[in-house]
Image (cartoon, rainbow, N blue to C red):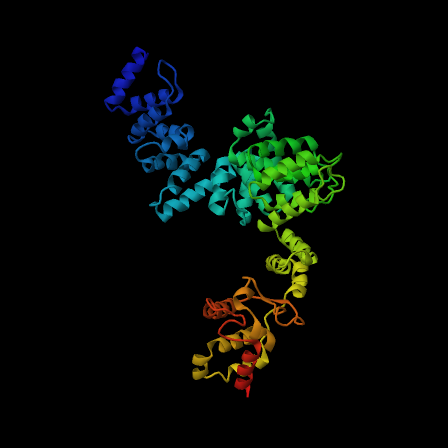
Length: 495
């Protein structure tokens, strides 16, 4: 309970006496003498005393009342004047709060913002880590999800991180990761990761208690340590297992590689000592693959091909290679397309599927797939004879013989021979990514070949022709008749 002396001060403060308001604010600020410590109540009385020109009131506000308390009042902007006066009196920590109050106001004047930035810079030079962090955010992008391109921002973040501010340390770690600077990343991330994982058991219950940002940090630390010449085995496994149990798919993937003692291409890692544990590797890689990690499917296909793996299975290797290709893995697409091309005699349309996978890999910049694709399927070449014949097609002929005109259009676009143009089953020839040219049923000596569809114009022209042949029999029993009849109409046009 408040003593008799405090009750007298409270009555005087309520009556409007400035010295009593100042004394009451000081008591609530530090507590004791029967009154509890309450920074919010202290700010209320010190604000009333400061409005009566009590200099000690705004000095106490600037030195002892933090920003978190000042922003909770009904009008936080009204508090900035007291922090400004304390800053003008040489108090750096008051300048930080003043800057935060001004910069968070969208309606602040340019002059006030300039003075707030000057106060913030003064607080940063005074060694206040929060001011250094805030100044870095004002100088450049200090977002922890992107690289920092401003050199001044990096300087201030570094000073804040060296002062022990965890947010700045995380930002520098993310900056190092985004710039692929593993040394910079480990310098700031490794102490944080050790603090997060210290005393934690490797269990699902412990992993579920981790924040998402901590899970990502542990996962990345494990990945970075794996690439070191002498990897810290216990740290790598501890970090990766905690993150993997928290369902981080990258951690599951790299933990699988760690147990397999191999890199993403299946090559033995020099930093990984000891024997590979393929059973554990397959378990973690499967968990990552089930979360749509294409590299995990590809790594599984590599493991199932290893002679030293007790679970070696060529069928499983091919299944996982296909899944990796379907998930968008360029190397898997190139290898699966190559495999289909080499075994094209095993199935009727394996060359068509091989061209599809090689084309996808080539679009992703895979050089080997691009070179092999030139052998599997050729580009569309314009047909000179068909172009000349197409110029002779009149409106009357187009109305009488629309199928012949459409076949000439197709031959001119894709460079078909006369036999191919007259006998091709157009509906069956379209395979989406390519045109299958195969008339061996009528002309056994002809050659089966594939023509790639590269442009939207080719696709539009082909769909227009296909609509004409949509419900029409393209065989000899159809309206076009036999090959001789078709050839006769073509020769008549050419003559």
